[in-house]
Length: 119
Image (cartoon, rainbow, N blue to C red; front, side, top):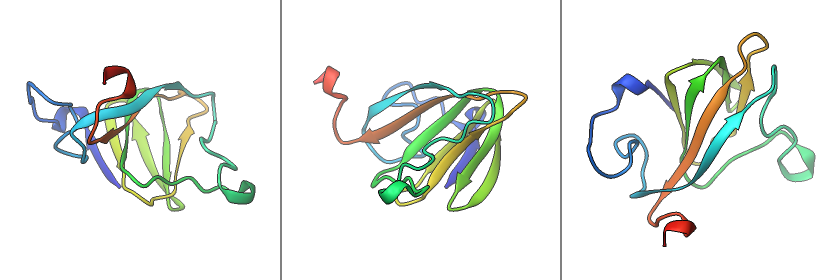
């Protein structure tokens, strides 16, 4: 896992904004998520309903609003507006939204090809 601030990103002018911190030539999937107060993402997603959620590629979370905790392999890391968390391949991850200041995130994956709508 890598954690940085939006202000740490280099002004690149072309390509995708996260190219210096996560592999992949193109942003290939993603979305905007509005979490409920206290919500924990991907609970019971794993095989047989276990709390286990991993990918074979990196995933970025940009904290657009609010605060919470990013759980990586059972460890809790505080996150707040302006943070970027890069989850590495194989890391079990869950985002936990604050009860007082619910979290809004942009999440994305990057890869060798454009998103299907851009091909």
